[in-house]
Image (cartoon, rainbow, N blue to C red; front, side):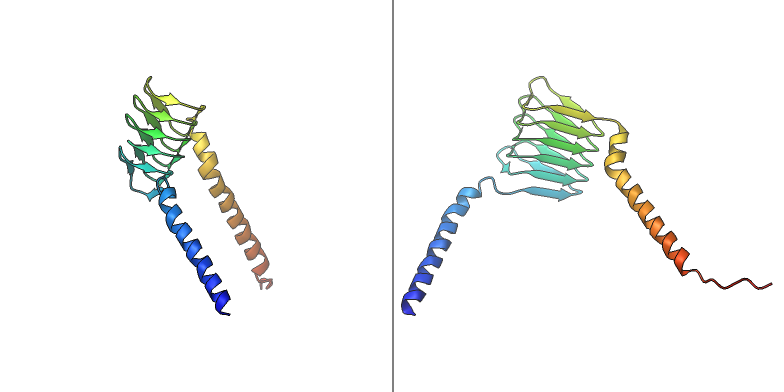
Length: 168
């Protein structure tokens, strides 16, 4: 029993030591930024894994390792800023200053792209500027859900109405 306890303790110590040594190495780009209703600002010497914003904008002065995604806001990449892979915006736009880089593509639903000639984009730029796209993405599910609720209410009322004959 003493041998098993030592072996378990040694295993636990090894696992904890490994976790303690590898966590700082992985933490360099490990933090993500998510905000609701308040803009995200990535400062010049800051690196984040990804940034997601609901009802706000993302201002990139530093480096986002993967994606920048904004719902109801914009992605603004200022001079020297970088987005590692994709920038995706629903209901807003993308603005790229000089000496900026987006490693992947840019996709915009319901907005536009302003790009300085000195900006670099590594992938495709897809812009769906019509309001129809916003309706299809955000409005159509609510119309479907409303129709489903109306159907349920109609069925419940139909089968719960009393069948008492009217008296004359």
